[in-house]
Length: 465
Length: 67
Image 1 (cartoon, each protein chain N blue to C red):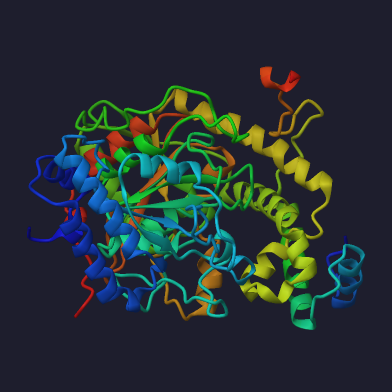
Image 2 (cartoon, each protein chain N blue to C red; image 1 turned 120 degrees about the vertical axis):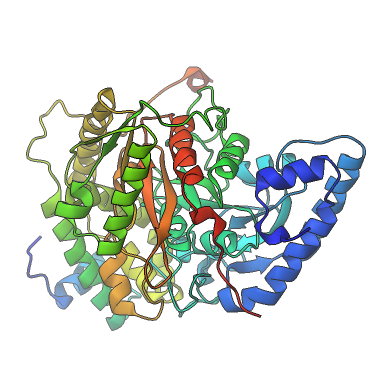
């Protein structure tokens, strides 16, 4: 097998099912790769090669017996370390939870284990899925495989790094203000935050209950759809979970975009914020590709980014503070400085401000969803800038809020980041494709058409010797 | 809350809500964080809200609730 590190789930599944690839051989190749290269990237916070080999041996025996469970059977995956895996610590990359051993699996973990996936370990995150890369925590921050001096994006930092580096073909991330889509953009992979309530959050450390989403990061659109097929579904014990028929996310792949109406929210990255020139050029080139494939592109307008950001951050700060208040009272010194400051921003938010933010939220959401009477999907920026240096605190602070992802946590809309090329410095660029609630299959259809028409998915970072 | 909030203001306010273990560095963080939160409040487009605009958080009951 030429390069097992960059097999897609779809390719691996075909080989595994046909018994042309052994799950054990596949797992060993990725274990070797992690052991060789992760010292440079810190994608894993807890690497579990023994568990991976156990899972792989079990998968191999089942496949040999003709008991193929589906596309993830015998395929490696990893979890952001805020997602519970029974018997292992869920640390949230924080000193606060470093001894917090999960008693049971998160729902998403249960589903991936039931699908026969090969568990490789727990991945780095920004502390409690917020803040940024910190050097004052028990574990170092993940680094970008395209240039290890640069930031991965976050907060699902290890999920982006591990997927891009060929350590796993799929990882689970979470997204409260853009934390799946940001590392997807900055690491050059595909990241989907489905509709709010589509994927159970039970067993995942919360950041802000009404904004939290769980979703997959993969290297291809098809793989992402396959993963969402596995993890979506109603969970009666998750109060935000939606009881709706879901699945078949690969069903529209290959249908193309001819005749589809694609809206573009250009004011997010030209007027509300001025996006980096290379990022903007990449998005505009992406729109030309979609137009060339037969889509009808038209500009649409929504509320300014600043209003969405104020709404998202007021709700996030208030809900997060409620969760962290006790720890902030009793052991404030155990947070990284950056995380503590983010959480403290909720300390004095007035109840009326929080409630008004949720009232504004509903109004903005209804107005945003009304746009879909004229368009089928919407394209806009994800990040305004490529990844900055990981040691440049000033630039990290400047670029932290320069994003257009939080609006879709406010509206709960499904939103995906897809790679659109590279900056002159060789850092990935990405754009977002957003849809109306529960239109994930259509978003995948558009992203897949774009992906198939461009060469970006064929490029992989060089990790050196 | 005044825009010219000081470190001494946040020290007192922090104590009132049980944040009694914050160091001076933590209080500086709290001061910056509070100013950030105030700026967010100013950016919230709430002037168009009418009394009929409900919260996005709706109290729901389902069949399991009568158990």
